[in-house]
Length: 388
View 1 (cartoon, rainbow, N blue to C red):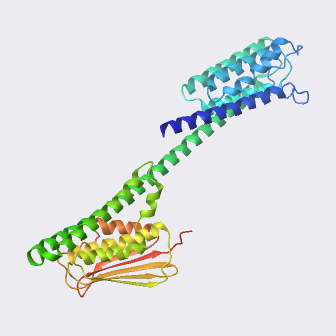
View 2 (view 1 turned 180 degrees about the horizontal axis):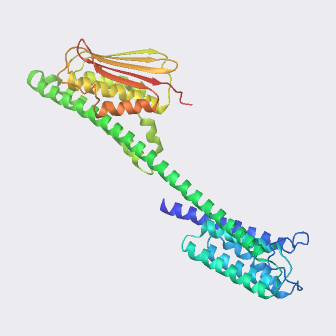
View 3 (view 1 turned 90 degrees about the horizontal axis):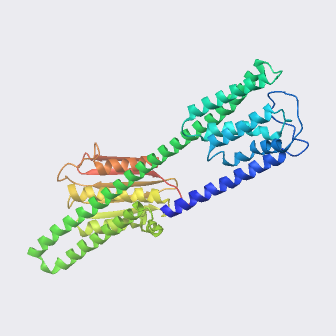
């Protein structure tokens, strides 16, 4: 993974360098096109002198360094600034390549990381020196002209600085978004781990107690009890492997197929029955496929409700009812009779609290409360969404 990221970063740098090189080459070429070659920055307004070899070198020096403006913005600005100052001081004709000074200042404001204040102060001092030299050489430009030109350069620098600040804020927003998404995913996995471990371990403990009872009363049924414990353990391992696959950065995509779905609620009911809990399952409506998060939430609701039934109302009659409507899934799990303990259904234990959060994230609602006639009731409404 590290090698892939390194290769991708290298390729991006190479691609960006190629684009910057083409841009600087195009700007240099335009400086020699007759129709646009005379368009450019003008400061000193000194008497013009013919173009010679030095003028050609200074023209190229004002545009070619832009190919490195992202990697070495300070050096790019220094070279272009010196070339611009010499070009103006010698009184060469205006050139389109002088636009490179504006672009270099913008790039320095946007990409310079260290010693930004030193670079800005050095550029300002250099400009003041150029203004003095041009004045001594007989430039007719007034101080207002030099001041307006300097403000133009400042605007280019500040534009780059504003883009730099915007990029930093955007990167920070993306980082915070990733952290929030990661925290939400960790919380979801923690809830899944709680549901898996609590349900299956509770079932295994109850089945182990029943097997111990069978050892004394009905030895012939010990094999059935041990088989139930083994089957429950395998179910727990399967779901734990799925969750660990989600945690792995290179997790196998096929693990998604092993996510508990609403169609496997009958397995939960059968497992509870093997643990000695009398459970009845009733399903109504068209049993259609739903989005993975909807089916998983419905599965967890039934799982947690049956876990509470086996823990706090062992041996009491339990009814699981699932109504599959067009726009929602309605789940109701009720346990009759007095409970052997007080399930934390009013304030919500970790499992129920996690279920409420999961259901609310799907714009649904979950209510868990003790029944006046005894036992307790878990009722959930989950908006239905198709897999598509």
